[in-house]
Amino acid sequence: MIAFVKGPLIGVEEDVIVVEAGSVGLEIRVPLSVLEQLPAIGEEVRIDTYFQVREDGMSLYGFLNRQDKIMFKQLLGVNGVGPKAALGILSTLRPDDLRMAIISGDAKAISRAPGIGAKTAQRVILDLKDKVSMDQVTESWLQSGGGGAAASEAENAAAGLAGAAREAVQALVALGYSNLEASKAVKKVELSEGMTTEDVLKASLKYLSFL
Image 1 (cartoon, helix red, strand yellow):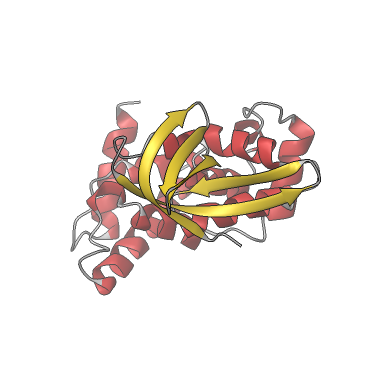
Image 2 (image 1 turned 45 degrees about the vertical axis):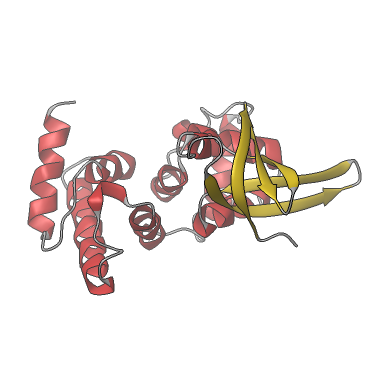
C-alpha cells in the first residue's frame, strides 16, 4: 500500500524515525543499520517501506533499498519470526551479512539477535537457504556503494566488479575461511574499475592478516 516514503527527516528516536510526507509526519520503524546511514535532520531521505495492518494497529517499517525490504519480508515468512524479531535480526546483522550467514549455515551469528534462540536461527536458515544467493549479496553491496564500486558509472564495470568480488569470496572459502569471514574481508576492499579477482583476493588477504 505504501511502497516508499520520501521527504525531510524530522526526527530519530531509538528504532523509529519520523519523515515528513505531504505535511504529515510518518513514524517508521527501522533496523539499526538504517539509523547508521541516515542523513542529518532536515535533509531529504527516501525509505522503502513495508506497511503492516493487524487487529491491534498499523505499523510502517523502513529500509534503505528494495533488497533489504525483501529480506525483511522473507524473515516474516519464517514460522515464529514476527516484525520485532525480524528487526532485531537485521539490527544485529546487516542484510548482506545475514544472507551470508544463511548461505553458510551460521546459526550462531543469527542467534545473537535479541529473542532469537538456536532453534529459531536454524529455522531461518532452513526456510530461507533456497531464497538467498551470493548474487543478492553482491548486488546489495554494489547498490550501497560498498568499497567505492563503479556501479553508478557503468553497468559493465559494476558487473565486472561483482564477478571479481564473488570469485574472491569463493577463493577465500576454498582457503578455509567461512563465507561470512570471506564476505566481510572482500567488502573491506576499496574496489575500483579494472580490478581483477586476483587483485581483490590479494587485498582481502592483506586485511585478514591484520585480524
